[in-house]
Length: 139
Ligand code: DAT
Ligand code: MG
Image (tube, rainbow, N blue to C red; front, side, top):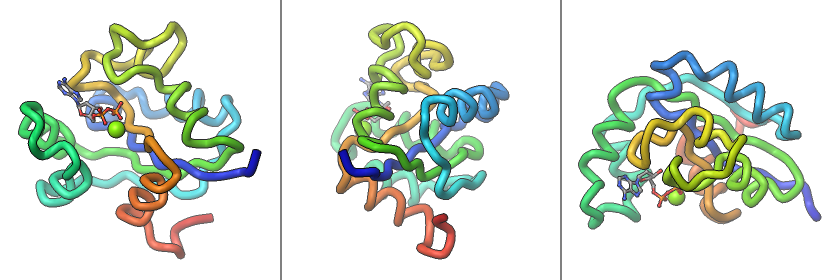
């Protein structure tokens, strides 16, 4: 399988609770290489654009409010089969359904505040990476 990339955000609740170090440790211990990373604070417009696919959903307002309430850690990760392997590492969207040992099982409070983002396809990984990082910020 070809080496490829995915995009992640450690969401505001992960930063607030001091879970960034533990989550990054789990990510790197699972074989992902950090290609780009920064602490950043999304504006309202950033979050509305990033999650535009969900704009008709009833939770969209809450989602945007949550994602903009404090800084996040955005990162690009590289590994064989990166997108699928990272989705497996983070677990189901709702932490109540997430498998034991997954990041959401360990660190997420609820479906609305679920600790981490992971791209759902190679195409979206490229779009989301470019949303947060220029080519010169990727190593
Ligand atoms: P994922 O983040 O697992 O890819 P998604 O793309 O379906 O999940 O939704 C994006 C985010 O929106 C998700 O991480 C948390 C929020 N969300 C999804 N479904 C929700 C719901 N039923 N109630 C509240 N927030 C929800
Ligand atoms: Mg998604």
